[in-house]
Length: 507
Image (tube, rainbow, N blue to C red; front, top):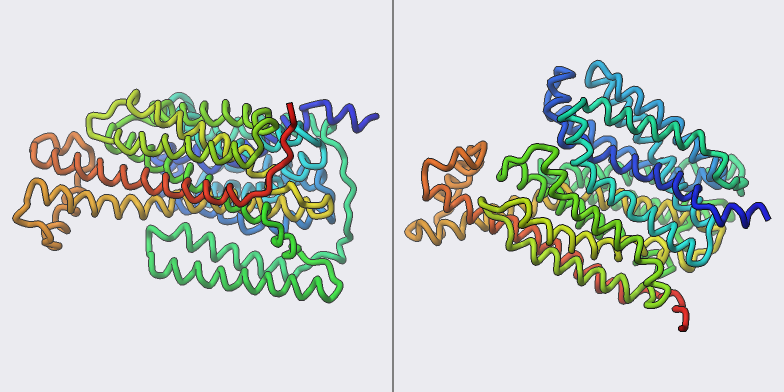
């Protein structure tokens, strides 16, 4: 009877959704506050950017270990340990008096805490709800990270403009306290394994592999060749981890991650869908935010306001997804979502010019968010569709790792796409305005250096030819970003067709 009452309550969902929200928010809201943090802590931009990168790195690196610890400690207990630790980290970050203390509180303590919490949010939901309620709950948790990522610039803009970046961490601490106060509403889950079952060697190998993989991804825009080498070494380490885990299971020992779960197509495809969807959204948001602040010269608050339609579309369609999927099926609705997101990307690809207004971008942002809402909301539920109860914790770790990797890859990969787009735009601009220099790489390099030296678009207003060249470069580079994002969503569309669907209710 008690379990039935708990399943009828949405409080467990609200509690874990809040946790997912603050973990994702932490990775985005400080983007618009970097200059203020640099001034307050007497440090430099690269140090703060490194701190932000290490937060993502540490969270991703501990994800598989955290998933296994749920079996040993218990998913609720591990979630609460992570929450309390997160509170310590966010308090440390809020009161930090130098960059070292900020790094310890934000990157290290919050990074580890986030890793402990994220897989547990998915497995707690899976263990608490069933049927359509489970689909609804997983949909909300599945898009909570995306909503936080999209709303982060607006939240950070409000904090920085009207208060201080420290209040951003203080708000997270308040949410942590709320979660701890309401912890009694989360059902208890008994541990299923003992401490002696912990695969320490596998934990070390997976940690090394994930660290190298994420570190390589985060460094792509700085040193491409070295980053590719680091990524390859990371992938080799993860392949070695998979071999070690298979061997361990065949020897009758408990693996850190049951690699045989990957035989399930839905888990593989659903996790890949989540990775690519988060990559697409994170990368597009990064490029749009950069355009808004560098070209349109919007402040942090107005930048967040312009990207808000994506959040609204994401949330509305994520909420609608579970009930619609009961009639249409997960596969069809996710495929429709991909098509809608592609339309949004293509619509946006024509909107980026020097005279673009906030209103020009809002329709495309909403449509893209709406499509992502359908695709992302159902990806976790469909990934876990065929996973037995004893494998849910392992599987939740994999889906959470996919989400974290997608968030990490978005900015780095789209950063490279932007550079390629700029170079393509320069070639186009030279063909139009200086045809005598068409194909002249030296001249194009000079144009690129001149483009880089223009701090603001207003600096270029003195020369109409320069303005025309910069306008073409901006149009071509941003169009290229949106076209690549559309291609990524096209890949997601193809992947959704390979999913095994849930049974649709007959009317």
